[in-house]
Image 1: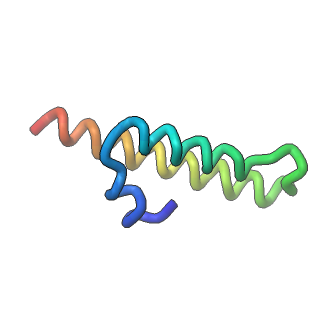
Image 2: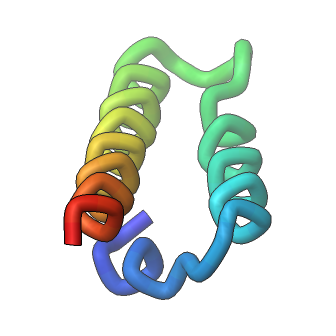
Image 3: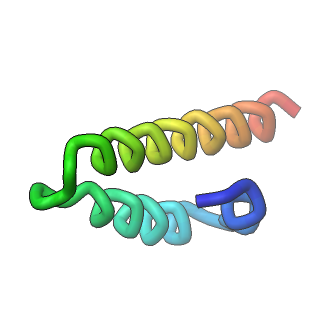
Length: 59
């Protein structure tokens, strides 16, 4: 998921759909390198989402 897609998330329903899509990329049959890359991408996305929502709550 890129930054533009991330900024277009409007609610938790969108978040749930996005997370489901990202987790599907981490399949048992996926090679270790690709799995690690997908996990890193998911981790980065979650960090951005948390930061976005924390900033929103603070303001």
